[in-house]
Image (cartoon, rainbow, N blue to C red):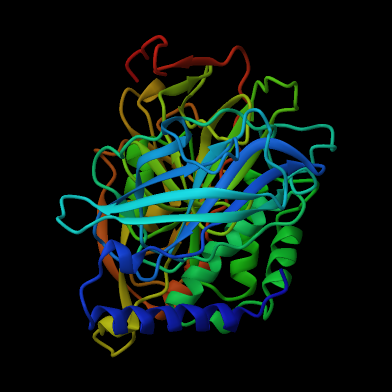
Length: 497
C-alpha cells in the first residue's frame, strides 16, 4: 500500500506513450491485443476455499472498439476443456484504464486449491470483424486472494450504513451483453488495494488521485498512497468501516485542507439515469452498496467501489476488494423499501440482497485557465450556473432537486446535511451569505419552474471563496420494514416508479 504517488503518475504517462506508439504502427488484431499471462485467483476465507474464482486478463493497448471474450477452466483437472467448463461466454472485454479485466467464475465443489496448476482457455474476438479470434490455452497456477481479514467478517455490529466489505460468496450471474451505450470516464483512475475494512477510503483515494492528476495538482496530495488513505480514514471517522455521511463530510475536509477545488455531492437511491448523467458530466464517482439478508446469517454491511463506466444494464468498477483490474457488475431489477426504490446488483461475493444505496459525485470546480476566460478587468474567471434567491446567487450544485411530494412540483432543497446553502450576496460580490431551508417537507427554496437560473461569470477570487463552503451530504435515512425484490428473471414485475 505504501507506493509513491509519482510512480503511479509515471505509469500513466508511460501508458500514454505506449498507446501513441502502438497507434502509429500496424492495426491491432485480437492476437496482438490479448495478453499471454492471465492470472487465476481463488477467493479464500481464513485460508479455505470460498468456491469463488477470478480470472484477470490483460491487454497490450487501449482500444475503443468492441470485443468479446470466452473463458473456460478445467475444474475436474482432466487436462481437457469440455462444453460445460466454459463459464464465460461472449462477455464484453473493455480495453481501457489499466488494460486489465476481471471475470468471475465458480468452483462450487471446491475442488481447486492454492498452487494447483489448472488449464485455462480464452477466446478473444472483435465484434463485427473479419479478424481471426485470438485463442489462448495455458496452465495457470492458482493464487490465493484472502478476503476474510480484509472485510472484517469477525467484527460484530454490522450495518448496511457502514461501508467496510462483503460476505460469503454466491453463485455467479450468467454474463450477458450490455444494453444501450456504454459510457466511460475519460480520466485515468487508479485501482488501489484495500487493507482491513478500508473500501470507502480507498475508493475515494482512487478518484482524488485521478482528479488531482488530471488538473496538475498531484503535488497537493500526500506523497505516499498509504498516507493518503490513512488521512482519509481519519477525516472520515473510520471505525471498522465508514458511514456514507462521514465519507462525504470527511472528503470535503480533506479537499479543503489540501486546497483541492473539488465539489462533492451525495445522491441517495440513484437511478440508472443519475449514474450515466454523472459519468457523462466528467465527474469522478464512487458507488455505494448496501448488503442485506445474507443467506448464511452474516450481519448486514456495505461496500464502496470506484465507478469507471456504465450502461443501462452494467456497471464497470475498480473494486479494492478484488484483484487489480476492471470488474463488471450487472444490474437486475430493483429492491424496494417503504421509502425508496433501489437498483438491485447481484454481487458475487455476497450471499444475499445487494443494492445501490447511493453515489458520491466529485467535480473539479476550479476555473479552467487554459480556456482563456477573463473578466473585463483581466481577471481569470469561469462560468457557473447559479440559482437566484432573494437577489443572492448560489451555485446550482449546492442544491438537490426533490420529487413533488408535498409541494406538488419538483423543487429545491439543500445538499448539505444542515439544510444550509451558501452563495454570493450579489453576482459581483465575494461576500458569502447563507440561506436556510427551514422545512424539508415544504417546497424548500422554491419550485424548479419558478426559481431563476442564471449562468454568470465569476472571478478566481470568488471561486476560491466558494470552495470554503462546499456542501457536505445529506444523512441517509434508515429504511424499515420488509425488503421486497422485483424485476428479477422469473420473479414478479416491478410497479411503475
